Image 1 (cartoon, each protein chain N blue to C red):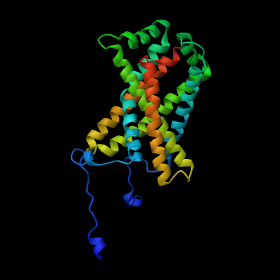
Image 2: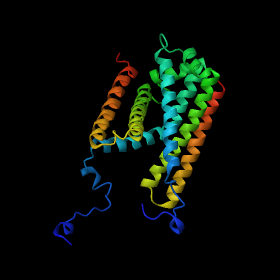
Image 3: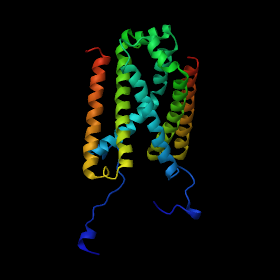
Image 4: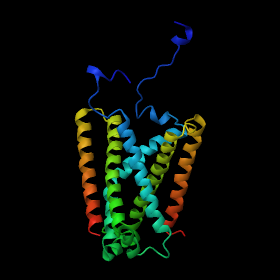
Length: 144
Length: 121
């Protein structure tokens, strides 16, 4: 055995609480974990999404109720909370959508499977999803 | 991957092959297309989005059929995705099975509700 082989670092299973906070992920790593996080978020909020579909599309009366929920609240839930949840969904959808397109592009293009493209496309994904969320969020909260 | 054939063949978990990978991408493509179709109709409509305009998008028969298949695609896509998440992070078999059953019930329930909304339009 050579000297080099003996000094190889040893990697064990990482602990979520003691190891993860000190780990620094590259941009592509953030896109990857956020792809999961956004997917799980949309999975858990699916009843809310269908509730929005139901009330907005079923009748004129329910459409008014849908708008009122976002403007003045529904029951004990204030309107800004509906908007905040909708904003979280907007981000989750945008991130999942753009990161998904990045996946598809990497599947069809051999040129896209490189370290450089992996990094630059990850940065584009993160920036674009956050930027579009800010633009749509400003609209949602009535800033323009 | 270690040996996965003959008597060592893994018979549980993901399918370790083309099927899930391809279905995940095909369903994603269909949903992305649907997103663009709905978005285009909202963006290129004039004035504020009224009830008639919004409900009108989903009212035509071809849009109902498309939305129906998108709901089916969503169901499939989310099942593969959530199953992967549970398999990666949840190790006790009883808990993983419980969560997978919950996922199936949650998804079929949601799909049923969405289809009901769609079909009474």
